[in-house]
Length: 123
Image (cartoon, rainbow, N blue to C red; front, top):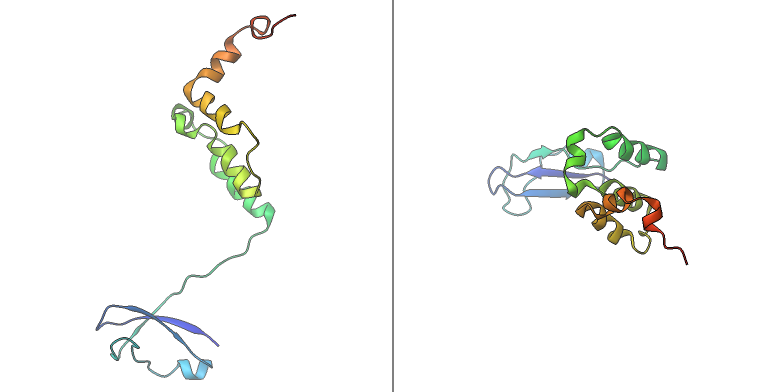
């Protein structure tokens, strides 16, 4: 029982027509909106199911080796991690956005540039 999509040359609407059999679909359909003939058949969208491994491979391959320009744009900091978490269906941990914002503003680098002895407090 196929569903075909057509473009009507008369009213310029995209219409979907459901057929009970492939044989029925071979007949020349009429536009359900305006009744016009000569519908042009369109390619319909379709979905492809991917395994978890395929999705992770695609996600990683896009930014495995980003150029230096990628890191100069502060909007990209944390993007990869957020994208990974979303793909895995995991909520970001508490404080994640704050760490990302610190990284974007440069505060995080300043913390790491500060000597360890100055970052920790001794009682």
